Length: 201
Ligand SMILES: O=c1nc[nH]c2c1ncn2[C@H]1C[C@H](O)[C@@H](COP(=O)(O)OP(=O)(O)OP(=O)(O)O)O1
Ligand SMILES: [Mg+2]
Image (cartoon, rainbow, N blue to C red):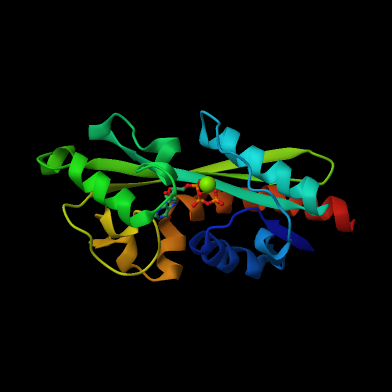
């Protein structure tokens, strides 16, 4: 069964692909459908944005579509950048500038107050516009300098105590096991299973 990934983020595609392939889905990134207009992510919540992206992709392609809206909540910044994570340092969205801005805002914040978490909401939408969501979170600390070269986004600054490593130092399989995205997808599996049972009878 075909499953369109409603994301242009190559890092997400890589992670979601590894999680979804074993489930037997034929995973196709939306980039392979020319002419798809990226939706404006103007929702107040991860959920609203994820739904918006999934619905648009399912409608455009006529296939089952899965979207991910995610971001980093930093306690010392009262939950920022949150839903605005991708464009934290303005347009165009840029991981390096976002990380630099985060480092700057966190200057002088003591160890104990450097807590935060990634959140992810996955939305699954059918071509007839029915949508279901699943969420996941992963707790960590914001480092004072970037560490590691893997992953994407804020990964080099996000330190997981349990592994004594940043997300950028973990291999894909380990990140998927513990990440916000991995956890959300674990929950989304049930949604996908049900949809497939209905479809394939
Ligand atoms: O595992 C992660 N590791 C590091 N950073 C992450 C992660 N997960 C989300 N993030 C950051 C990247 C981006 O700054 C924002 C997501 O924004 P978000 O709008 O959901 O994704 P996006 O614009 O990159 O791609 P798209 O909307 O096409 O799916 O949070
Ligand atoms: Mg986005």
